[in-house]
Image (cartoon, rainbow, N blue to C red; front, side):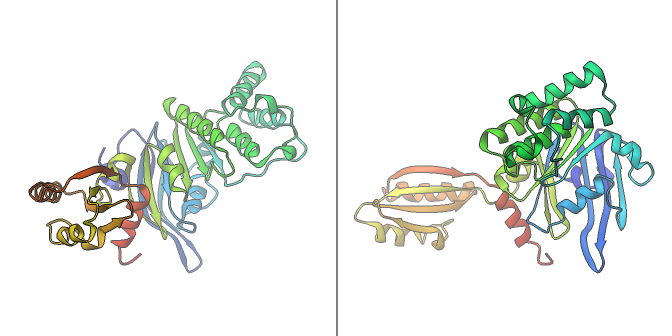
Length: 329
């Protein structure tokens, strides 16, 4: 799927569970969200990435029907947000950053309370509560008072509550906060299971590694504007942050080789670095012609390449590239 279909209102698909059109939110004279357009299909784990203050939580509050937009329109599962918020709320779950928990209930009692609110009864309730505790590896803490749980365990319990009623849309604001590495793996499995069952999962983070490992698609939000969105690998591959690092063995000839390399096509003099272990390191753009030229010149000069490493573009590279190429941001 091309990125255009994610951000172009005219190219939405019937499979898109979430459709956002020209969404704008103002807090007084401050523009928190500015003309955001986004389509997110069912069965997707979509990550909203951006620095603090980018507008992620504001967007989530709109999706959760807790905040009315200043302008624009949001449609969830074919239902326009402003027309039937009660029906919308039956289809979604919203987990804010560090969601509060009651201090006097046991973990299992907390989940049973919400299971009842979602309409689950009897054996169905008991079975689903057990499933969600097991999914977050909390079965042995089922009788622990919520106030006595560690931060990571409280976060696990909040996620268990979020998936209780098998919502069509999960909106999770910084769900990995406070989680240890094992809990992050469990979170990823739990959310991917929801997506496999047809739900749409939207999570936010300003921690790049979390989004990159958790989500199959991402959107990049900066100062209230959605800079780009699409499948993670597709989005990363379209930017020039990828490159090649070449290590050239040149013991005793480092300065001479470095001076020679500065005249080669495709080599940025600023990207030549002398290494202590008797080698020269060069970083190149992902450009086949430049690489071919470099290796041809290296072969003619009889300079041996001891190693080559391909550098992958990260989400951080893309965000920096987009912000750097947008003077108005």
